[in-house]
Length: 504
Image 1 (tube, rainbow, N blue to C red):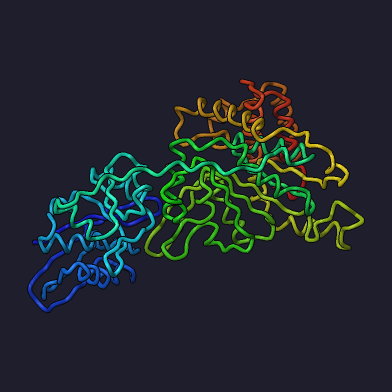
Image 2: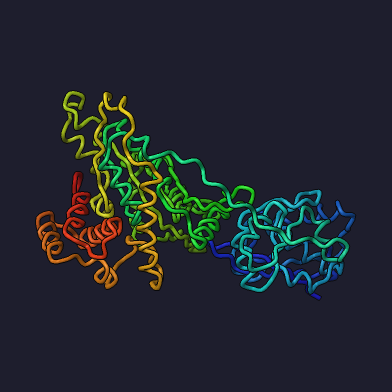
């Protein structure tokens, strides 16, 4: 008789069902695991053996074979410990076979039988719900998995508790979802003195999820502005929060099972590797661009990132997803993020100030910003120069709008877009528009068409650049609560399109 348990194998944010089969047969005593297990899965037999011994359960002097089906799917991670233990216990008739087969389980076992938290409880709960099965997981993962709400989640602290549950001695209560984490106290936009043009660009970027490049001398406030962007972004919707939390679950970033409605803000250092940015490494884990899904990716010192990393960003910016290719698997992660990049005008940073610029000016600026290729530069909807603020202005009282005031306008513009694209799949904000949808929604009036035609001819706008101007203009019109894209909206969008740097 073959006993069965069920668990999952992760392919990106997707969880594929795995059947754990256990056969106890006559033959030389042994414990083998087959079905493309990695090192961590192969070592599960020792952890399972020790955990059972801690409960005074001795394995019989027979041949025990564990098969992980489908056998051609790679199995990685320590979360296979618990389902293997359940399959063995069911095969030995210690727990009911039918009860085990109605459950999807995951969890790592310690040598004394305790259940240790593992990654991916949230996507595993979704997979269990699709199969109409309950989920059994370590107690530390219960609050996270319970957020799915579509299936029963049982959380145990030890294998002994699991056995008592299945034998009816002490049933486990259903886990409850963790608390919604409070938003962090954000830095306020009113702290930034001056830089009105950059603040306006930040508002437009937040309203339509338009990528923004800021160039300015050191200390002009680029990083300060970017750090205040989360304060003007609307909260994640329920769907977006679940999408983002699934990725963070795989990366182990969910705190005590709590779900945050705040949009992620990721700011990797410019020395980060390509695998750290786009994903990869052992297990093809999500990278920074996926961890920033539905949020902000801030890349400071943008030209200092390696050319390979920068060029890899081009496709995800357009498609909103990244494919991590491996010899035996292709893992797809979503990555619809708002890219905010900051750069100095040159290597020394003082190109606009002749008294402080190096002797290589102005060629040093062309060489430095030239590290950003034309095709990548073409993907920035907004480009703004951030001039230095005079020290005399720093003593003046703050007069700019607060994050709450700007955020209210952004939220109103986002609401307009939500209603506009309610029946359009895969389109949530103006930056997602393309094709006939862009033509029907963002076509300007006659004066606006004449202006953008002159700009396209004068500056040699690419087709991508032309469409991005229309998208930005549509967002500006939404902020203006205008149903029509007019000439002033086109003019402002164009002013952010070609202010400096290499032309795409």
